[in-house]
Length: 382
Image 1 (cartoon, rainbow, N blue to C red):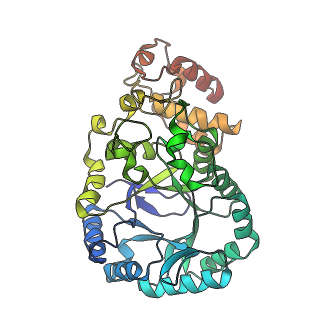
Image 2: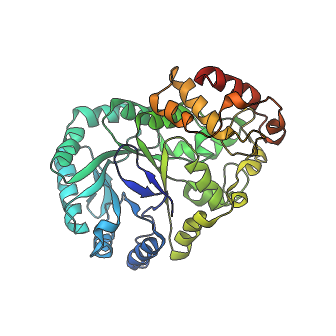
Image 3: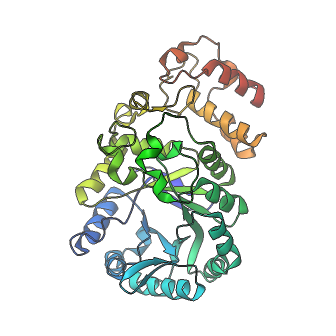
């Protein structure tokens, strides 16, 4: 298992994590089975957005005797009332729900306390001014949460929260179909078929800006909906009209700037093992570029997706990394220190490019790689 730094939190998390969708299977007996499988494979991160008390109690039992082996991302403002889930911004409900969750989970702290499901700008303002953010800060000061997170599907809202400096971790929906759509306060627009009827070209700029800003500011992204609720794995259901494999979906997400961990949903041990097997997959099994190029209504023409099909470079330049650092710097109209440092430690730099153009013959998306290398040389100075 590969571990990544979760932004600036100091936590080292497995790049494959667990979503909680399957914890309730078999009357919650599946929970322990999934945690056993995760521990054996080195998975140390999980998300718990659900407020279902039966699921929370099952997670508490599964964590008994091994709490320190897992990093818990659990949600503030996800509560259980009248036998059903409710998202709340009422401070008294959020406080009662969180304290109840600690008892159910048999723990006295949560590693990442995630403010639940914020997809509207006025909702973010309510979180800031209505006491929820202050409550999260109080919990952190008291040691009941170690770090403050936020979950969102809207890149404009998420960017506002990230730029505020208030959050350290962002849980966000990342996959190659959702990434094409403009921001919306209605999460259902992400999978509405009519939004994919017209030809879509390249990543939505708000999403690109969000990922790059998280990378620059050290806010770690944990990914939900990597498989689009399973739709991307089925050609009949996928908005792209072509089925992707779990390895391709995971690799796409992990290749985005700022992304640290994919929270893979699993309704069985076999499904979790399938996601974990990404760690042993070959480069060919992870490769998504040629499949993307076959999408009938979606095009990344001229847009680098960091797939590395351009490799190998005759001068051994890591073209995908150079391009990613170029994009990060261009987005800020300056060179952030972290980007400059990461560029500096590359073994070979854009200035070594001999403009032979062989890389461009391999690119499935017609990217002008030689021009990118010229830009990078001029920007970084070598």
